[in-house]
Length: 479
Image (cartoon, rainbow, N blue to C red; front, side, top):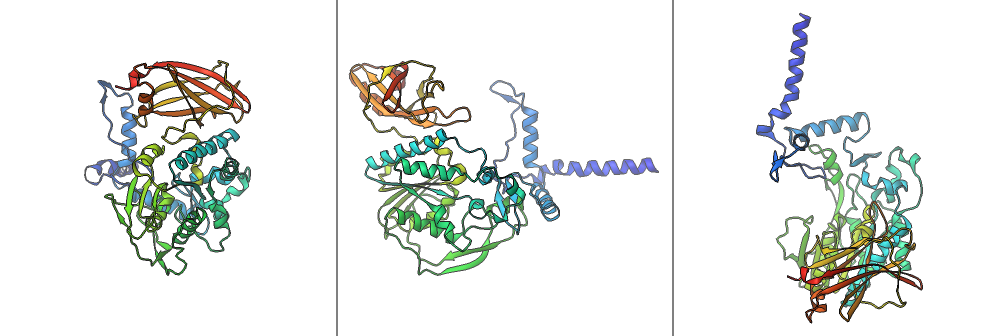
């Protein structure tokens, strides 16, 4: 009898375990509310050889697509959050009083894994070069940072307070360095901290509609651009908002929360075939607006987009990284350029400089030859084939703390010098990047001489040194 019961118990257990697999024939999961891309079914043979990772990839595919996945994930979330007060999703922190936080903001909240001084300098320097280029095109420029939710409203964070390492913040350090380098920066942190009302959503990682209006007013007001302050516009309170974190942790039982709807007349229309404000590229037009806008933004720009579109006669919104600054400036000639980025990602200013050829310059000091272990690679850019990428890493034994890097190009007697972006990576903060447009390269080789010398020059104060020289045939890239 006992043996029969055991066999029955095992059979039931195996049947339950097989349901998610067997059910994939009719109830396979192909969509998710989580912030991830579902795995594709692996190929047994790739590029003519057996895929040795097939079974690992098959396991990942099953984990993403098994039958009734969302229902099971939702049930697990309800159990863990209601009973154990924890999140079953790695990307979400279960806060107190129903608050949810994005776990990617934890380093900023704890003041740990901070950007180095050199990385902060790199980020600000890159933005200074960006501003210089934009202003050379006759446009106005500003950068702003959207605060993490727990930076402003950390009182509902769980036990992490005891693990705070430092009150230092990357965003604060960056703001100070931007001021040093005369970059136009719109401070949203102070603006939000001055408000008595909570302007972020409890179960979403973003600001609410009132917070978006505050940010919109601060940005355009800080740039001196006339706009409707919406001070006399009615804001209806509605209990209909389903937060992004809410749907990630509870895909089937998300509860709405309070937000606002501003009752203003929308005068803009989409030029692009826009399905959602999440789209990577959006164009709008507005016969009642004035001026033109190019806005590099992330998800915090979703709620800014309608407000901006209602202000400018033409507006272009992009989520591309790296920023295709050169292409967009040449194509659309915007009068205003705004960069908005969330606090947790400000390191991208140092790791992903924009796709643009910086402005030609002249060195104030003579550069002496001082070859060291600096590296330099020249080749067609993987991000845009209309550019050559000249990049490498400085020799850490000779590089100065906040030195600049220049690229000097010589074809025959034709010489041009450009500042390079300063790049940080997981391995080093001493990287550099310069994008040379093929049009510029062709102009330098107009007389048929295609032998190009590339010199990497470091400058620190009154000292300048040629640390690397590479020679290439430009004809290889102009076919």
